[in-house]
Image (cartoon, rainbow, N blue to C red; front, side, top):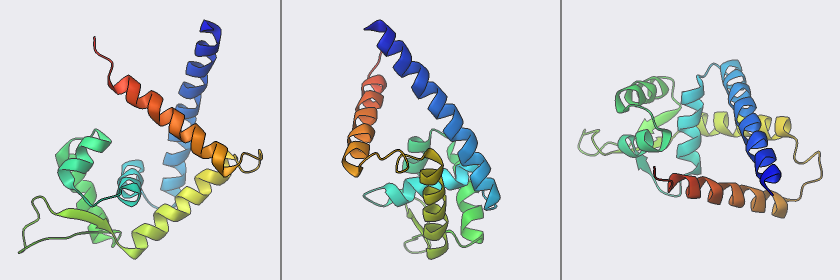
Length: 145
């Protein structure tokens, strides 16, 4: 049983490293930094609108760094901060059409590279796989020294 756990951990580490490298390269091909792509992906996949503080926590990056990313993506027309009364504090960051297209293009490319469809993995099996990995991740979040 421990051998299976070792194989699982080894595979997850390998996949994580490789996906990170590939995401960086594919984002760069589109003129984006990895964190810029990840920010837009978090925005796209969120069920509710997120502000800079929430995005900073989700992405585990400094709020100042995130603010610079948001500013750059705003200038390049990928995202918009939905200000209220000209105040940015606490305002949600949303994708503009250009940002949505960029994320969808990168997602499609990553799906193509990962190749689960080519392996004949059904949507149901993919959903189960992602759910189990999410649950494992949540279990690890609860780890205390």
